[in-house]
Image (tube, rainbow, N blue to C red; front, side, top):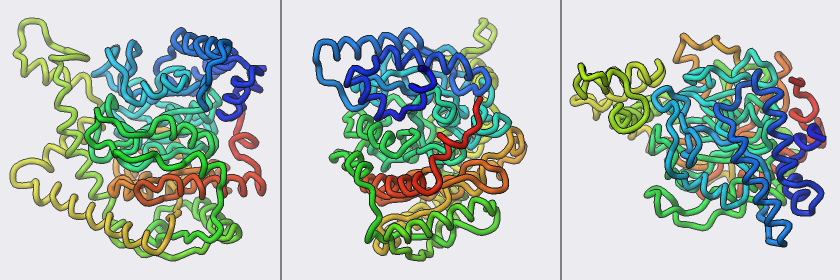
Length: 498
């Protein structure tokens, strides 16, 4: 029974709970049993809220028994990235500096999930403060990719993607600063969406780079992602960057997927040196499939995209150096050296030395340097000008096409440790995803088969203009249906068992 439940989609689970075929408690217990059976190997979770999850599930069953109307995801379990504050549940952001910290309030996204009767199973592993492309920078150890536990599950949200791919949860939440929803989705054969910047509230999401960070849905199917997107999106007066506009009709688009008559752009900058042959092969097959489905393919030239990686690694560290200044060892979290023999300044220094990992320290130092007197205009200022050029390239592209497609990542999942001592090689994992964050528009990654060299998942990225997130789901659903009909679902039919 457990195996049958955990293989269901979120939409199927919700329907069976609503009809009384399953109870929310049965579904939650099945996923908790799966976590207990496999997570010691995968390490997708940092904290399991067993009692809280079962209490939420019982509340759903009581509502149904009373005849109350249930939402479209009522009773469906979810894995929450450990970057969103959750009242009464530890929130560490993958860092020792917040080890054991229990927030006194819920993030807006967390509250929306609870209000929708989604069952939160626990908090997932991540690169410390979301800084990384592999989930190897977590202070609590790396997560394994369920397709091959010796390989990375993507980053920074590798715990969420691994929870989906190992069937520990049918839904998950990630955050995307430079690709941290889409890149893990690509290498684990799952679906991940970065909504338009400002479409999902950042209130209660621990900040890394405030002008880039965006929470979003992770799932195993496009429809499930759309259902979750609809729950978490919407205007929030507590977030000054939140967009006060209706949520695009993402669920309707996912239920009526089609690319007939659409113009689909292919950017020439998203291929070449550094791209794995099998990734390009699967991407080219995806473009051919889009043609067969009735799309018109348009070649695009976006020259500023070649500068995106450099601009990102000035803007993001600069903002992180400012945001992480609050972790001083005096207000909350870790405190080191407070024995009466050190000044407040020394306590702050000792706390940061003990609490921050190497990658976080690297980015703080880079950002502090880029913002320092005499260098601000040369570095941070110049990077912001490049950001404007990237936005202009997207604007020109979307005058010609409805969506843009590309590989999500240049390679499949690489072995744990392979790039640990080479930050530049690690940063290249987000080569295709970063331009979207700099421009603030919307993007999705969905599976497009396995690379022939290593039999590991490849992701297809779809990019849409800001506040046109429904286009992602319209195209994604059409592609997903065609792939499943032609080759079957890779995660359900070809993923190795744990």
